[in-house]
Image 1 (tube, one colour):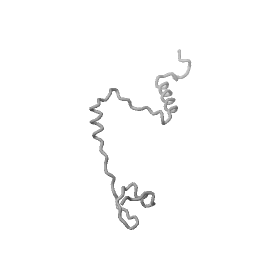
Image 2 (image 1 turned 180 degrees about the horizontal axis):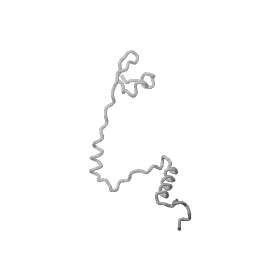
Image 3 (image 1 turned 30 degrees about the horizontal axis):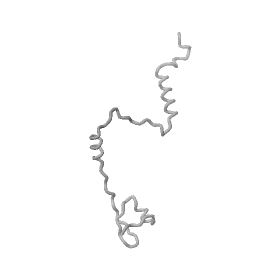
Image 4 (image 1 turned 120 degrees about the vertical axis):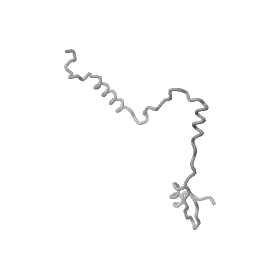
Length: 89
């Protein structure tokens, strides 16, 4: 009987549980682990991956300002209506 009478508190599951709980409690949002690549990506593969990215045109919505109909991006409709932005003629 060489356990010290701790009731099995030194079992590996309990030790690992306390270690992970301490790590999770001490971590702030800025210290979240980031994925790190195992190998360097070739220049060709990098450029092929970047070439696949495509921007989409904003969805234009008709808005009446000063009696004229203007087509503006949907996300900016309220800014145009409040006068924060002026449409280009």
